[in-house]
Image (cartoon, rainbow, N blue to C red; front, side, top):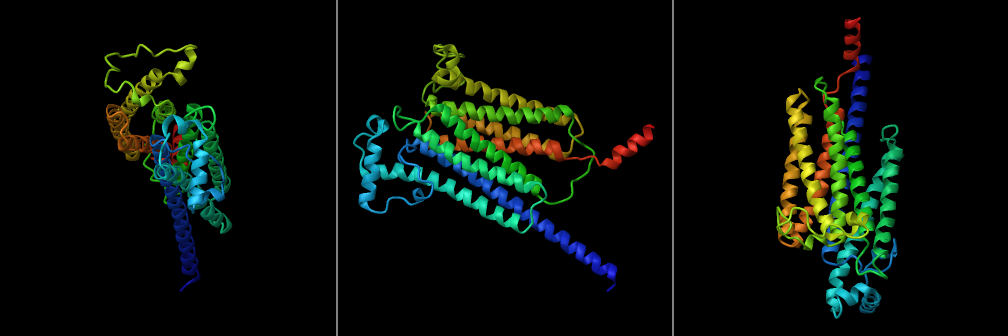
Length: 373
């Protein structure tokens, strides 16, 4: 074997190792993203089962262990009896019923801790073994920091319902859910960036309008998540359980409250109406994007991801209508909340495609410049 062959084999081996390393990093990020979606769904379950305030203390380490003895359970139950929600909603509940709502909230917090570990340990390993691409270490560290901040935001939300309210603040709930969705978006984008393989250079890049529309759709879906959080926080899905009208009205008569600017955040009718209207706007934007990608010679990945996104939005709207008509049946409510996260994932995937698919090589631009000269 010649030295040239040996050198070539070494380069090929190094390339294979790098590719397998980046694939492992991408798969790890996708796993964490899936767990974040599960976290969003379990969080929805704690809200719909009125379980979110069952644990009245924040113990980041010791809280991972549930009550182990009867005395421990009674102590936790007695603490729950001291908050306003117990008297208003769960007065007279049995210890067995308390355990049911306790385990929902405990599972939610345990899953959050598990996500932190599943992200942190592989991240430190990849960083220590120099498997991360230059610059990604600090980006992943930033995501880890956001995850830690999210834990604090979660307790900040729960604490709002322990003294003067019987539920958490809708403002803090919106902050908590929005932070989770933004972390999810960062994970998905990072996973797409880490997936190995040479870019498929077709020259069929997204037009500036298609790129802008993709970004607008991501922003619109994020706004819809925020509006949905206000609907959830105010329990606004339990009123106006008709569609397409709101009890025979297009705009509900009790939309406005005083002061008027608070209607967008504290009016049950307004938050539900706004959530409905935003859903129609998101769908319209998605259909316009599908039309745009069929009118220009863009890469297939751009066209297909726009179509998948449109289909996901249609399914999500159908789930939303079904959830509303059934007065927020638990299974439909959870599917709708998880569906919102999946729609955001699809929007991020499409946005990534508009930035990366059909890349025109620099040599092509250079040759065009020489030809025009």
